[in-house]
Length: 184
Image 1: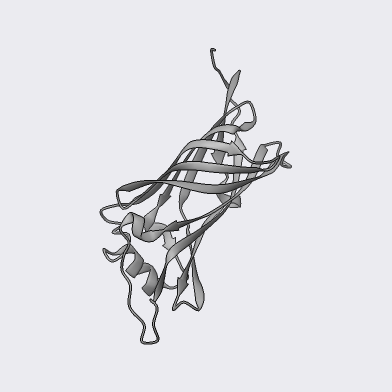
Image 2: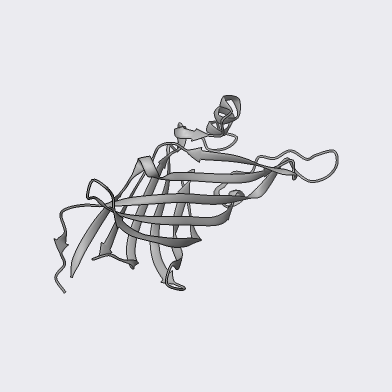
C-alpha cells in the first residue's frame, strides 16, 4: 500500500473563526498564515493523519486595534505562544462525504482534544495537472478550555464575549508527486 502526501494549497484555503460580541452579533477573524500536511493510504482520507499549524501573529479581524489586543497577554500571548497546532488522532466516516475529525488542539501551550466536522468535497485535477482534494471543516470550541478567559459584564446582563468560538475552514490540498511504499 502506498502512502500519499498532500500539502496545503494556501491560495485556495482559509482558516476562519467567529465569536459572539455583545451577545447580539458575531466578530469574524482569520489566520492569514497557516500550513497543513496530510498523509493518506492511496487517496483514502478515512485513515488520514493531519497536521496543521497557524501563526498566531497572523490573526486578522480587519481591525488592527482589536488584532493587537488579541495578540497580547489578555488573549493569545503570541510572543510566548507563537503557534496554534492541530494534530489528528482519528477519523470516523459518517457517510459518503462526511467525517468526524478527532484531534488535539494546542493554543497557548494548552493541548485539549477536539471533535470537528469534516466534509469531503472530492478530488480533481486542476488545469496544470495537479491533483487536489477539497474539504470543509467546522466545529465549536470553548475558549476558556485554553485559558482565554477575559470578559466584561454588560449593564444589561450577559457578557461582552461569548465562550464558544465557531471554527470554519475551507481547505484544499495538493497531492505530492512522490509516493512512499509502506511495508505491511
